[in-house]
Image (cartoon, rainbow over all chains, first blue to last red):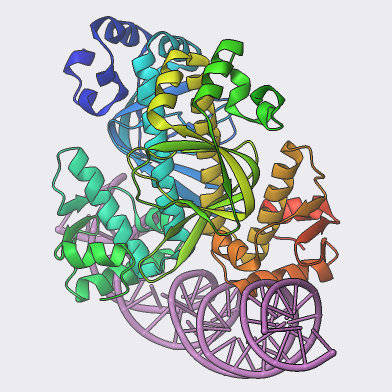
Length: 229
Length: 229
DNA sequence: CAAGCGCGTTGATATGGATCAATTTTTCAA
DNA sequence: TTGAAAAATTGATCCATATCAACGCGCTTG
């Protein structure tokens, strides 16, 4: 079953040999979520890890007065649980319907210890996530609204490409408020900025949720902080 | 020599047995930096890793027009190189004089593979850094200037405590511009906010670089986003 | 000791994005 | 298909923080 899994080549699973694969499959429990379902809450004891196979999740942290920051959107092939030691660092909520493989942490840790290739794979993922996180910090600390939105679009495009989807027509399952809370902006600013980028011919927006990249070069330059148009 | 090292209990070194310790010691090359010296540049091939033994470093990323974001300040016991796969994700620069242990990545990776305790230690560190990074994202995405400065002070205090230094008298080796570039603010705003916090009796500032925490409870509440004073 | 300079503070003003407030568009249930 | 609710857009105004500017203090250097 795992062998036929669509996200296998994107996941940690790919780093295991057949025997390890079988062990992993024995540990796995499938989970299905509906839009808005919460997989786990920030602060809860992190007893499980997950691998997303279908759909999209958002990870977020809340401040006591309700301000929210979405640290990341996850797509098929992404692993949940890397950043979490004792407690989950974020809340995980489904954006639309989603499916995952659930693992008990204890059992998975045990498997990881016996398969150093898995440990190395997870360390590599952690490295990549750390590196991405630094890029995000730069965005939040120094980029303008226009640059942030451009960065978001290019980032989503890159993720789509990884999943062998079009890099120029980006489907964004989340809503404006989610994008805003991911970029440290407000819904209104995201909306206005998308309108501006459209008027400037850099993108097109269809049916609200589909963004077409019309001038990838300029958009990338904007995202990279080259002040120009 | 390593056995007598002051940062040993804070570092990855502590997770090794005597034999591993000796191996590690054989790989190590000591490095000394002067204030402002650059250890490595963002984007350079990451051929080495480091362990900071003395002083303070800042890690930063630049945008093409000179905007800068300082992702982190490192203190004795901290490891450099976790986030870096092919290329360094940030530039590392000394804040004041510093000393480090330098390791060739290849040799260190080899050692890590043979000592799974080290690999686990690094994975744990990576987890902790990821978790910290998420907290930082929340700060940059949602917190006000006052809350950011409070978070910074509490964070520095926590780091000082880890090194067995006073948690109420925090020495900050970096200058205002560095703090500003770490919080996504300007020098002027940091300065003004410190003045306000002082006037409100939450902190004291001595000789510019020493911050005394006078009301840890209120400061922590502020840092955590409880809108109050 | 004086001059110069880097750094921090403080003040005055400007502005990008937030907030408040309608409208319009989309979604979805009946 | 229709109507109501949710989401997105657009407009008007406000405000937190940036920007521009002046000043002062403490070091360094001649």
